Image 1 (cartoon, rainbow, N blue to C red):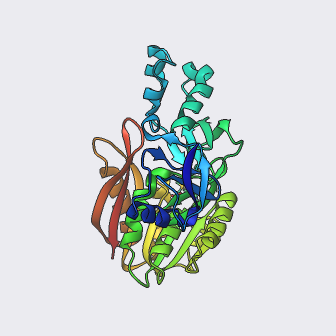
Image 2: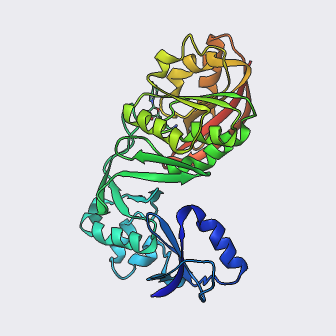
Image 3: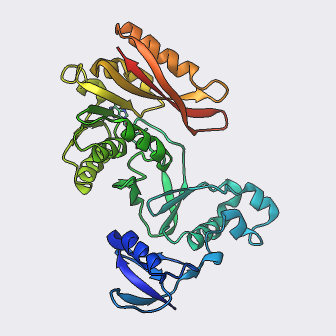
Length: 338
Ligand SMILES: C[S@@+](CC[C@H](N)C(=O)[O-])C[C@H]1O[C@@H](n2cnc3c(N)ncnc32)[C@H](O)[C@@H]1O
């Protein structure tokens, strides 16, 4: 057991800084967390803190890669099969278990939990991202029997259920980039809003902006609404429904910015999204592209759609958002629409 300072999660960073400045923090142990508290190993007791005894892991035993942790526990053929990278969404680790390792899934899951104390559930992918709601199904193989979690990013919290809603932790940098571009008093529109990560990050970082998000999946729209409350944002509206039905009419010419995070099928919705932009408004158009020539297809789609609507496209930025498969990348084009 290790002597720890026990602090509520919300105050943990401030207290950690205080312990550091007083040279009380014992950095050779990894802090532990539970639902309410964080436990920091300390060198001695001093007035002004709450203390507890807790079993903590030594830093050098912690944070091994999955491959390192399983060396000697899997054969070298099995180690070759092992998919060593995995995503962590909130406290759920989402792994890929190749068929050849199906019998070793418990061992793989416990190796992950041993090296990631924040992981309370390990789930395996049971299919690819599919359907109109873009859901990638998972099945729990270890830990708590649930697929919902709370994910934290950029000072915001998002509650979601991986089996009922789309969510990718890999888009965090992109969401931060978009939020940083938004100007005070902008009107931003996020069709395809999911549980609200783009819309809420914009709203939270620019409180004078007004944001409208639209989501078709009833489960995601419900989480979107509750995430607005969770993040105390009074400048976002969550609409449940189909972009193609909700946008024509009321939203024509009213947005300074439209972000379209639907890379697979976004093209078909350009005719509804472009007319929402004011003259000189900015469109963030997400798509998939060939690794060898990532932007050609999406630039043409955008230009063709704008031309049909009598609008002009000026490309401002184009970037690869993330690799998607061995041959495909997700890209974004930021364009001014005149
Ligand atoms: C790729 S996900 C992105 C979700 C969210 N922006 C994010 O980054 O987590 C696309 C979302 O668009 C929603 N969607 C698909 N077709 C739609 C439509 N016609 N109208 C409104 N939302 C739609 C899906 O349910 C899904 O939640």
